[in-house]
Amino acid sequence: MGLSGRVALVTGASQGIGRACALKLAEAGAAVALAARNQEKLEQLANSITANGGQAATFAMDVGDEQQINSGCKAALEKFGKIDILLNNAGITRDQLVMRLKRSDWDAVLNTNLTSAYLCIQQVIGSMLRNRWGRIVNMTSIFGEMGQAGQANYASSKAGLIGLTMAIAREVGSRNITCNAVAPGFIETAMTATLSEDFRREAIKQIPLGRLGTPADVANAVAFLASEEASYITGHVLNVNGGMLMG
Picture (cartoon, rainbow, N blue to C red):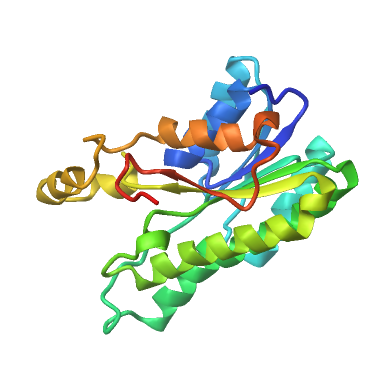
């Protein structure tokens, strides 16, 4: 799955799944534009990539802020000259039962998880159209497919990403641009580290493979969808959930 000569923009790249994906894309040969709020963590990641012979540059970006998206994407395009691969990975949670869910928490999650993906696509799609090659990968979730109590905002944002994925796939497919989504299940990240042991045990009981996933499991799926080998796959949701949800 060689990506030599390609440029990838990864949002939420400073930790967890985003970090693993950035490392995997760089390992495959892509130059990586690393975007997130935490500049210190981004610099550490960029240093790791360049130390292994890769190319990386950092761009401070809060995807909840449209102006930062616009300026960050513009800076990445100026730095690398193009964006071939976009991974919309940045996301947040603000969990609460719907009867207590504040409008501000609804708006924050939808804005960060869904609206930001549309804005990032809008900023980089011109580069892909000019080059008649592109890969857009949106990070959705198993809970965007099956729902989750206490996560009406999060599940809605992730379900929205699936609809966005299919719409974009239809819009730009004729230009050799694909748009797909990856839907992780329970993955070992900082977000799941706060789960109680009882919850983890019950979750694992629902997973046929009998374990939580790793960021590397998700990164492998993203790298495949970003590759030439996935050139005839678009509008697809690739589940990385250990069999927790099938069909």
